[in-house]
Amino acid sequence: MTGPIKVLLVDDQALLRSAFRVLVDSEADMEVVGEAADGAQAVELARSTGADVVLMDIRMPGTDGLTATRMISADPELAGVRVVMLTTFEVDEYVVQSLRAGASGFLGKGAEPEELLNAIRIAAGGEALLSPAATKGLIATFLAQGGSSDGEGPSAAEYSDRLAALTGREREVLVLVAGGHSNDEIAERLVVSPLTVKTHVNRAMAKLGARDRAQLVVIAYESGLVRPRVE
Image 1 (spheres, rainbow, N blue to C red):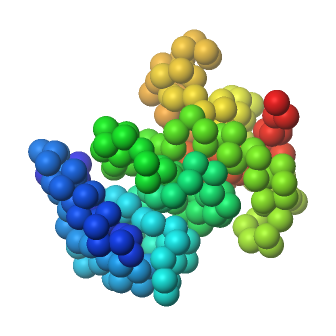
Image 2: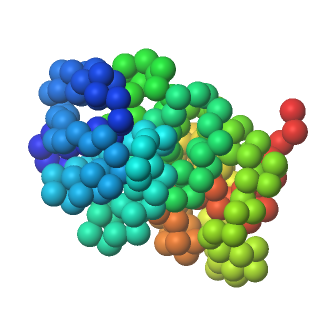
Image 3: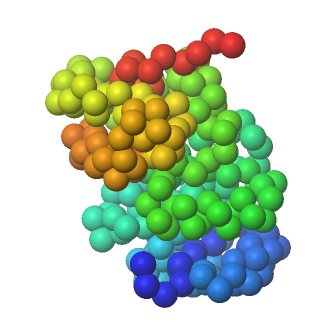
């Protein structure tokens, strides 16, 4: 990526947007290119500003963040845009739906400034699973409660067909990705290079129709390849 990371701020609270703007604009490698108070405006600005990363509030009047994320992820012209959902609480009922809709991950609004800036950089760099360590437990909890049975997305049979297309090593890598491991950690565990892991991840994404690593995690749980742990 050349030039600073273009960030779009989406939240119905002007005060919060202002705080995020000051934080983002204080960094040399990123800049705020627009602000929106609702999802419909966010989609328009994502197109007109050429944003790289959208910080998207989930709950907003009018078009909410979930709907806006679906619209962005479904638009081929916005294929390079990464959405990071912002949640008020650590456990949010919409988190899994957000990831399934195409979001790259999520952060609590109470995250430390460095966490937020790091999330933007990771999202812009394509390493899309940027939620805190709580993500995998959160996903497992909701799926265990039937969070995947909303009638959206591929059926169990379709997942089975897609998973059958994976090689043994790709399935192994997918399980480790779903466990929240980075490429470097997976490479160390499998005694291969990080580049080799990245190749396996990219191939798994292509075969499974996943937008990014976050989508791989959801697919791994929803397909039954990875079972939620009961602590």
